[in-house]
Image (cartoon, rainbow, N blue to C red; front, side):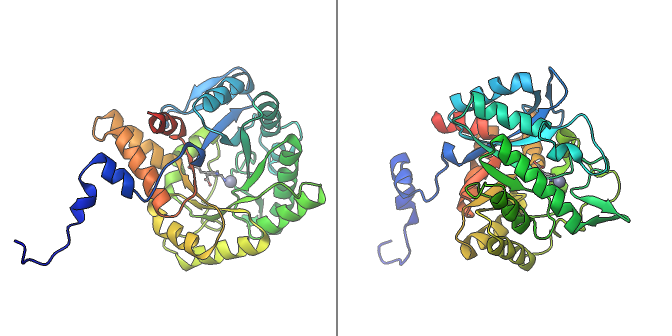
Amino acid sequence: MNHLQFKRHRRLRRTDNMRALVRETHLHKDDLIYPIFVLEQEDMKNEVPSMPGVHQVSLNYLTEEMNELTSLGIRSVIVFGVPSEKDELGSEAYNREGIVQQAIRQIKKEVPELTVIADTCLCQYTDHGHCGIVRDGDIANDESLELITKTAVTQAEAGADIIAPSNMMDGFVAAIRAGLDEAGYSQIPVMSYAVKYASAFYGPFRDAAHSSPQFGDRKAYQMDPANRLEAIREAESDVEEGADFLIVKPALAYLDIMREVKDRFPLPLVAYNVSGEYSMIKAASANGWVNEREIVLEKLTSMKRAGADLIITYFAKDAAKWISE
Ligand code: PBG
Ligand code: ZN
């Protein structure tokens, strides 16, 4: 066989030690961001039916939930509010005593070692469920920016460490950056949902956050899944407007986009491993069709390999446990 010319790639795969030595991608606990849903309604802890293991919690269960995260070694959360009242203008989103503002204040007071990221959008707070204000059946961009900026400033006032706008209006990074600077929060970074597709993978989240649009869909502001160059334009404008982090969302069907954004823009890149991606794995594992632990670690690793530095994931608690083992 010596005369045959071929490469022996298997030399580097022979043992656990050898594989560890040449491993290119690593998943760390510090990469993980856990999403939480905080209910304004009192004294509730509800499991989201389509997301086994994920709960919406009232303020009185919030601290224990946060302590669980820190005990697992998770250091960042992204907070979504589920308000009791909704209206046309999403007023509860920018109420200083709104549910998200209260939740942020409570976490920063009781578990100050956690980095608190505030999701900044109107859709959980509007009665029509859109991410901006509706005018003549359309989502009014510039008028929405004003309310979104007000929301971001109240979140910073409440103590948020990072503002993460997910609304997909044009110019939201510029508007929020200006609003934060003016209010004295020039040190608070913006983690932009720069590249956010109009995706069917958000279904379970909309159950959890009660944020389904009551008419139409989000295709006039979220991106068409068929587009790649548009993702570059979206990321580029957010970088110019002063974004500190870029998010690509969803994750698994968009790893190509993640790689491209990472190669072009030298900012920390965040993968949002969304609700539908979570539910599919949960359902298949509950049926015994896939090995949950192995499939989750493989998928999270693939996001890092595609260029993500950080991952927002409902699997954060399990992943943190598995990483420690
Ligand atoms: C709302 C928002 C959504 C998600 C995060 N923020 C849903 C949407 O745009 O409909 C999705 C998260 C998930 O599916 O896990 N702006
Ligand atoms: Zn929204």
